[in-house]
Length: 163
Image 1 (cartoon, rainbow, N blue to C red):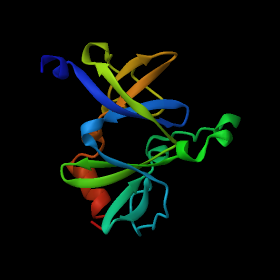
Image 2: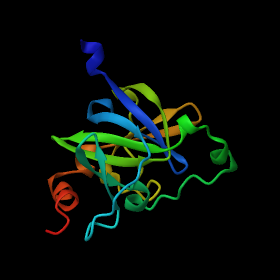
Image 3: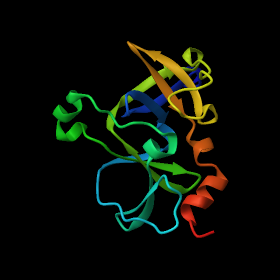
């Protein structure tokens, strides 16, 4: 049991040129891209909603939210269908929210001791949304704090855009 407490299990994904991770306990499922219906008066980073087996799920565009450029290398055009982008459906305090990703990567285990505090400015993302950074092979894995990204105020803006 003590071993579990010293590790995070993260679902990792590509967003732009960076590798990000979210706590696997916050991930409900990963789905393929589907048509997103726009919502009037929603914040600029809310793409719209999808109907996921009868449940309405708002879809957040982290590219817009964090001012991240989409992945633009030629290799991106050669990615096979199952590696293409999709939505990670998060369950934040009983609310389902989808985030758009460029490519799903894999599930990794990270020792809590390996996690370093984020640098002051990291690819335009405010450090308040970053739990930490971990060195992974030749790159860094940026661990997002979904609870801070989608706190009560944010959830209210997303789920009730007219307010």
